[in-house]
Length: 297
Image (cartoon, rainbow, N blue to C red; front, side, top):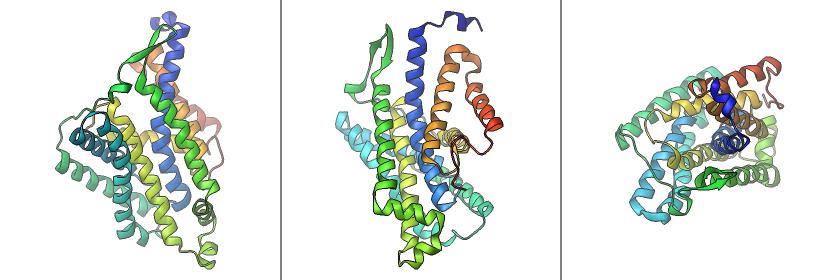
């Protein structure tokens, strides 16, 4: 590990910021998964496929419109498109399965992941796609003498905004309070004359919309291709588990641990950087097997 002896304070600070910008993507995707787990008790394995669809839709819309406007329109359209797809799936299938066992729901979402993967292949093919960030966010600026990508700064701004928006939606709005109550006692909420089925539909669509938003935001940072759903769904489940099942702030904490350890691993030991976040997850689960924050399960 000779590399570690050449690490400067500026390089460490730069990698921490890069890790935090990676945290933004992980948190947005994981918070949607955690929301669905917490309220609906559905371990949605197809969540990663919706993230992939969000990235592909972003590519198509941004390329069709072109220019800087194309990216911003795509950033708005992709999450909504994923949310509408989720609404169709929820109303068509999921709303009839809420009372089934978790294992059956897990297997069903796994089969849905395979179907969505084939649909993506039929629609966009299996070629790699790439999308540039809008001109105003291309390039980098100097941070302590080290270059830092402008787009990563945008991600650092988006993370807290999304977290605050989710918090306000679930804690300060009527639909958010009803959803939280339904997560604890759905029969009691139904007895008050509230249509729990549509509350669940709203929560499911919102959680899937977060996956689409994560896919839209990640599109300019990596190749858009088949298989990008597999890595993110494994990471998202690990983040939700170490954060506490169904706990949104736990998802934020878990995403920070995962993103920062991954980034620091690249700086300290690049050949084995992929191991660092998984070691961190293992350490957390040894000392906190139920997660860092309170689980809703």
